[in-house]
Amino acid sequence: MISLHGLTKVFPGGVRALDSLDLEIADGEFFALLGPSGCGKTTLLRTIAGLETPTSGTVTIGAADVTSLPPGRRDVAMVFQDYALFPHMDVTANISYPLRIKKVPRAEREARAAEVAARLGLAELLERRPGQLSGGQQQRVALARAIACHPAAFLFDEPLSNLDARMRLEARTFLKRLQRELAVTTVFVTHDQGEALAMADRVAVMSAGRIVQVGTPAEVFRRPSTTFVASFIGSTPMNLLPGVVRDGALRVAGGALPLPAGLADGEEVVYGLRPEYTDLSPSPRPDAFAGQVSVVENLGTSSLVTLEVTSPDGDHLVQAVVPEDDGPGRDAPAWPVAGGAAWAVPRHPRALVYRDGALVTA
Image (cartoon, rainbow, N blue to C red):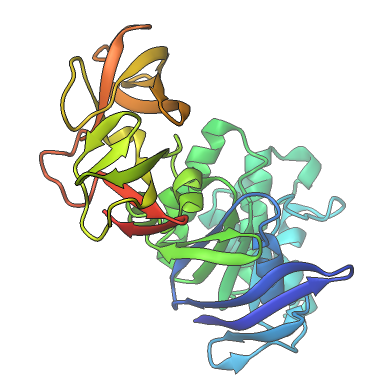
């Protein structure tokens, strides 16, 4: 288990990279730190590893307070974005290097390196140097080096970012399966929300040195706690439209939508609707607002339709994901409405309402 309490990191010049973070990561959990560049996620990972010293707060791994311990005494293994392999060493030497530092006998460390390499499909590459390997092979060598020392936790700093799209998909599946087999606590830093949602047991969304929301991938996707999370999570951002409560209805983009509970007349809110949960009606209906199709993008098994919506407070773009060949043509009128493919079995709200940037009701 990894516990962070009141963790703050202030760099020279007053730059506050981490701002009083509290976080609990369960034993054996695959945990993702997700956020845009500069949000503090890599600083947080490096602080857990001991590569950065916190200004205040504590880091606990297992039952030990490791805040003041150097990296080599924290029993963690880190895989860096650039893999950080030694170019003059062959694969065996790279994998076994942490064991060499721990003064493990040569025969034992080479045997362990060979065992881990075979498990990761590197058995035929043990005598090669990093310059003779592909990006995917170098990534596996970096993973093998981390695995060989049997750490209490893995720390991954965007290890897939240097791979091409096809290899990233393969590596994603491989990493998830490997982590489950080893049952080692894993903290994975990424700015790619697709990676985080696909791989993690839980996700922490970060912004400006703070953790905005922690939850399972389904929770942060379906019920983002703030408009920041709503706009960041998802391959297509959530539609966020200004609205106002008036005369017993939620007035959005000229339409009168059903009024959720807990809102008073005159309140200004933001109406959130994911493109994946948006249906398009070919004719007006009372629970929809009017738009005109401006762009249709083919996604293979579906199409992403972008509509221009005119309202009293200005023009907005609204997107909807519809089945392939089932959407309106360009310039056609359409009326977006909360629905989506899973509407027949509604397990969670399809439309959300935010007040002052925070989720208030659904």
